[in-house]
Image (tube, rainbow, N blue to C red):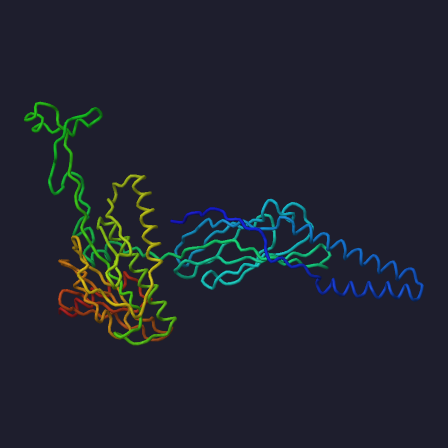
Length: 435
């Protein structure tokens, strides 16, 4: 799912050269020795002072040479990774940099990374500096600028340069494998639909005969149609329609007119978890052959995925499916939860909808003022899952609550519970309610 970005190069800018504390002390001592030698007539003091000043001059020359062609090239090898994973980054000195060819000094590169990528870091300066950055959260994270610090071999002069080399890493939502048990809880498992993607030969219009062409399988000849047409005819199946599903994300955020307030950290954790669940459902539905759309609270489409065949997929089809999954996950990364956006006022369940799933935060009244039926169309199975902030460690987690509200099964669960556990717990709760 990761992909490499093009390498980007940039020359150093805002270059500053100054003596270090050691260099400043050396200049002071050399000046005193030279002056003392002149006053007292001692040749040794004068020669030592001159030698120290010559060392300072050599250090200045070395640093000036290191400045020539100084710059960096950065390539993100894993531009999009799942949140919680590491992304590989290849950082190099430009080939024109003198520091990459002649060891006239030593130094380091300071990385100005955002908190979501582990914060500030440092690398020993070298021609190649491959490293990993830890992607701790969802979103598009800019890698930030780099600062090069170079010292001459004597440590008397310091060169400091800023390199504005762009680069980014995308933290994707985490995908959870629902397995068949979790899929059946939602009505998408093999036991209920076998697969919404029906195999060839069972299309809505059935078999369509067409004239035989060289290369057709002899076993696919339609003998009855051939007899009627007076020429060989081959079976051609009408492509079938995938079952349709819609996932509704309550993107109105965790606070607003319909709910209470929650700490920013809790809100972010709930929102990230909602997108994790949306990604898991989207991928699972597509794998079971469902054509799925993801909508926001205003009814605008965030992303969609077509249903895919299961075990019979070709390698080319599997690659296309992986690209489709990656594209959909990147679309989900850009979702923004806006507390005061207005809910949908029109029916957005265009197309055939057999399954509707709603996801939203629970900070008081989940999905308040959001008419979920507008999105569900004629879906026979409707599930609404609301997440509340996970309790502190050691506190009572709280049970999954399940309530039937008309055609909807409404679930409320802590954000740190896996989607599969939520669905399993809801099945037990629902069974207890019926008894």
